[in-house]
Length: 314
Picture 1: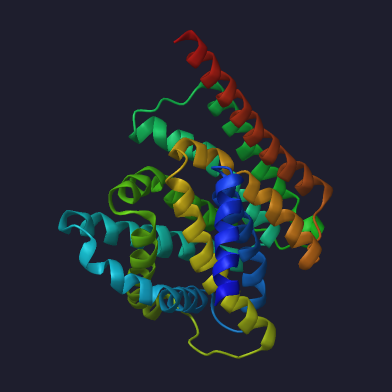
Picture 2: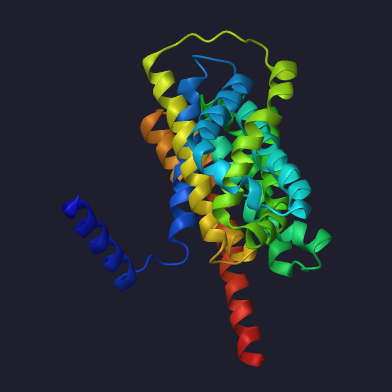
């Protein structure tokens, strides 16, 4: 026990001396999420995509249940309605769209579509949150969506089974995720990241049940070693740990900054899809993937330059 205590003290001292950068938690979460698309491909051989989402949420709920009970009585009554709504949108809405869509397209293409999320965040802010998008957002958005078109057009050449339908579902999941960034951050400010993460995950497992019964095409589970390990990774790593890190990071950085970090996810994900799944990508699809990433990076760079210019002017 003395060794454990001294180790904990030493770890705490290191954190005080060398605190992680504000964006560390969210970058780590994005890396875990990028690998989730790869892990899901292994799980699809074991169960239906909708069943996988349900099982993933159940595993995450079991992990957070002891902590969840601690916060249930501390959440203000007025926070429960947005908490239930955001639990549904953030987990069931996003995951159902993305992982059902992934079933019909390659992991590399799905993760590339996720790369549109920073631009989607800017457009949602423009239309719904009085945060006008700049000219470069519109230009880079046009280029990025053109890149998605090139990627899908070249899908048949690369043998990666890239489809419009699968990419569209993944895109809809990204739209839901980006639309909830600002309300989620506000709720986290009100009740705290640990309370939000634990209670929302537990709620999501329950809220998902009727949709699983309605949408699942096959309720059978054909257990396998790789599928089981992938499911556990999705439930614990991508389901609980990544959300915990992301929500903790939301306390330290703005919603806009969180959106600007999102391009890292497709970079990580495409590399993992090629290395671990051996997905082949045609030259035309590669050009589309790169166009999406470069357009998003350009939008981020121009946004930061404009922000610094406004700060100096003020």
